[in-house]
Amino acid sequence: MARMKFICDAERCIECNGCVTACKAENDVPWGVNRRRVVTLSDGVPGERSISVACMHCSDAPCMAVCPVDCFYRTDEGVVLHDKDVCIGCGYCSYACPFGAPQFPTNGTFGLRGKMDKCTFCAGGPEANGSEAENAKYGRNRLSEGKLPACAEMCSTKALLGGDGDVVADIFRTRVLNRGKGSEVWGWGTAYGKPSTGKVGTAPPEAKKS
Amino acid sequence: MSRVPALLLVLAVAGLAGCMERDQSTANARRSPDSPAWQSASSPYVAPGYAPGDKAQWEAQLRRRAQGQNDYAPRL
Image (cartoon, rainbow over all chains, first blue to last red; front, side, top):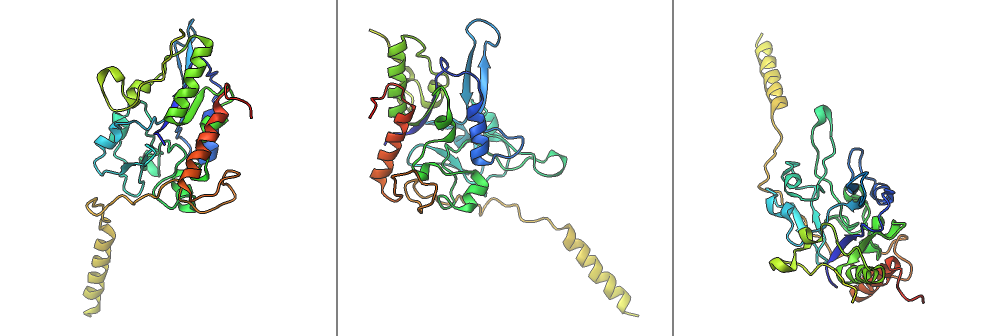
């Protein structure tokens, strides 16, 4: 199996925030934290586009590189997760992440910053898969239940694709070929590397109509 | 009359203990190992038709599930 990846199809996203709601509900995300957000580009002008943004589970994740306590790890499926028992809530990952994925719940008096929280690709954390302890800290582990992330599976227009990188890239490529436009994938190059620069990762699923 | 100084000493020690800082060292903090996603106990929330513990079956289940996002997938 290839690495797990997200693709957001800006041609299809209607800014309904269904993905945000699905994520909040499925993972019981604390107040003040949004693991996923919908961002609108060129708001109010012709060419406006919306995209759903969360942790992209980067090939060469900058959060992993800067963490002073090494709380991040990558699973066999390429999902970037972290151990909240090790996290000290310093916020370095938040500054390093190009997608603004790491979130910090205010925890206690004077707005004290708590442990970092982010999208887990619905894969939980280091606790036993599907356990109550895992659910309490990281939310639902849908991946171990044979399911894909709730945000992607709930998307009404199927704009947000999540799953095996090869499979979702194929789905997106087929779409682009059929509609003949909209091959740009926001964030793909940043997260998974651009082929022209020879970085780690696979080629973006661009397709041209012949 | 030696009880008063002794009591004061006990109170002072207790007070100092109250001011002690809990251990915040990260030297012994180690990331816990995670188990693969396909290794999990069966639960009522598991996707229909999938039995946890078999990697090949798990991969096939996810591939099949991903096709639910594909408008152009052939209808079975």
